[in-house]
Length: 329
Image 1 (cartoon, rainbow, N blue to C red):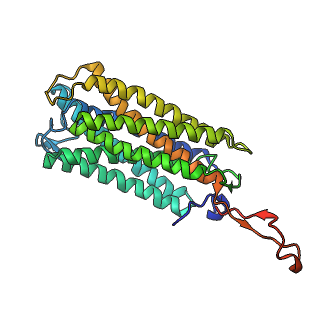
Image 2 (cartoon, rainbow, N blue to C red):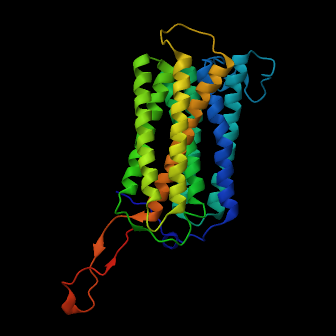
């Protein structure tokens, strides 16, 4: 299993630099509204409002005048245009990394993010050409994973990741708990996509149960980080944000459940406030996933595997008790 290298000196990192970090932060912030716009496409059921791709009603999509088009066309076409803009932003960020980033793995990771957004665009187009609800759900999930990837880029270029702080042994199992939380949230993203695209009362109830479990695990992780000695402020704050977002997600989920009731499959007009609640619920889920990625990365940054190595003071003391800990980062 490949471990994250959390020692900046080991990968010849130049240390924290403001420009690349804020470029990555801006890329993540710029990506976030795309999740809401894409979520609105699903909420209003207008994914096929524009039935062709990559053209828009046979025209170049960048030249199509959609301001006077029906509402559904406006939402779907805005989604396409914004997605293209995010793609351009990722090209710029990837080029920045290749020109100015000394860590080779960061260049690869930036390139992977660019490939991901390209695949996401192609997948969105394939969903239209095939008129596939299943591919629409996959497209929605990948969009949230892509956003979490941009947040990871911002984390890897951040001051906390590039600090000189040395990892300490993870005797309390913080890393394991962070990974469990992340995996639960990732699974919940997939389950939420199923509920949004295929509905079903049973799936919605199970979705709520898993959400409650996530809140419990996130709260447990935060409590663990609060009790760390020595304290890890950046990890504690990330765990706290994750816990708060999980709680907000529960409230939004309950509101969305009420809005969708009674799950009888009868088509209904989606009101404005109902659409906002449901789409914000989906978007907050993506933010929660990203927050969990940050918490997990910081857990791996500040903790290493628990392993003790004996350091004898002399050949004759080779059987003495360990006097130091070797931290494997």
